[in-house]
Image (cartoon, rainbow, N blue to C red; front, side, top):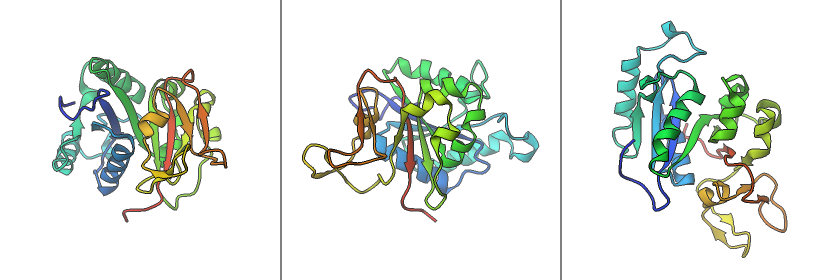
Length: 231
């Protein structure tokens, strides 16, 4: 993490992990999209050292993958390549890595956003301590256009399902203001942040979705279905 690029509300740190075998434009596109939507200060590109679900002999050597990520993100000051998994205690599982990062950002009054591709929605339930992971940290799953829909009620641990915010269709377009009906750019940090929860799944005549009170859970699972593709 770097010291700069912090907003008035403290550090908002995106965490995009993966093998990056190799890193490609899709990774950068996801990072830019989520950074814009949630006003993230930085996005960490966490290079998986020993991914538990992939054989090492099928991967490019770690330091080569890290070098490629460093080159790919060199033009973006707020994109930070990271080998945090290797820092003590070494952590191959997302829940351990996020806990390690949480201790670091706590000193900066920070908030973590775990960023994952839509395919992770189908397998996250099998991750180590997935229920704890999904209820302790903010998640943003980015679903590529044209890949169909996934029912989070069937793919997420039961305690994580009530925390889902469906951000379908949000992006460059403005959304209507709940009070005036006038267009405005979405402030998703405020709408879905720790101060309250807002679901964009079922807009109705009285507003845009259902608002949840501040007494709700401390973390939120967001599903962002992109409407445009880079390909």
